[in-house]
Amino acid sequence: MIATILIAIASGAASALMFASVKSGALISLVLFNLAPLPLMVAAIGWGPLTAAIGSIAATAMFGLLFGFPFAFAFASTAALPAWWLGHLALLGRPAAPASSGNGAAPPASAMEWYPTGRLLLWMTGITALLAFVTLLSIGSDAESIAAAMKKGFARMVRLFAARGVAVDDDIIDKMAALAPAGVPTGPLIVMTVNLWLAGKIAVTSGRLHRSWPDLKSTALPPMTLVALCVALAFCFTGGLLAVLAKVIAGALLTAYALTGFAVLHTLTLAVSNRALWLVLTYAVVAVLMWPLLAMAALGVADALFGFRERYMRKRPPPLPAA
Image (cartoon, rainbow, N blue to C red; front, side, top):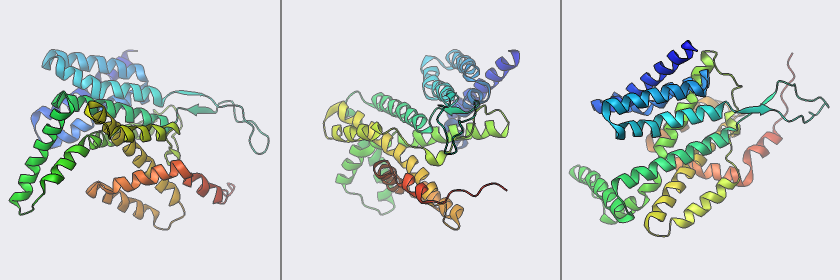
């Protein structure tokens, strides 16, 4: 128990220091800030959710004493609580259903059915959408003030482009400000996904992962997610804060479908020569240009509608028996 408490305090302290590094203003602090949930996620996956909970409470209390309640609440809501909850969900499992296999044999008694990665992704989508909407409310209490703040930010960017001889029409600024709420949850969702993946890899490397590694290529969002996306897109054309919230939810869900689009790409390229090279180039293009993320979202939505992965895997020959 003492070892668990020490690990919890160490993970909480590491997460708190990484989160607080943003106050330094250094460029590297942006990387550390985004990776702040990682130590607590590693603690949750490797030593259990209770360890992450103890570390989160200790770190939040330390923030409250040193920097005040607002900074402590920001750490708890954006780093500590999501890390604990996602680590808890990742370790949820139950004995597999006793369905017989093709040769009539039942699965082994030790077989476990773990919490689906698609539902984990949906939880991360909901968390980042909620945090993004709260962030927008912090810069404006209504849709008009939020749009004005967005326009002011884009106007600064336009002045930078104008100094370099690039002219930008005012209509484009208005359109960018109108679409901006949909892009707010995109970065945080990708960062949270990368953090959880890194935490799992660290747990595997250290031998502390107490579950099987999931098949990430098969990650799929629940079917009703597509209905939620359609509803959110419809409410985007209303007005007021409801439209802002709908844009945030739609942007988060499209980002989630973009992540499943990468899973589709990993599946459909299984038989492609130089597969690793093509995948690396795809990730690099998306990371540099960002707009191809919309193409990945379209691929994820198309797979949800037409089942590309299922059709592809049915056509693949069965694996050769082990020698």
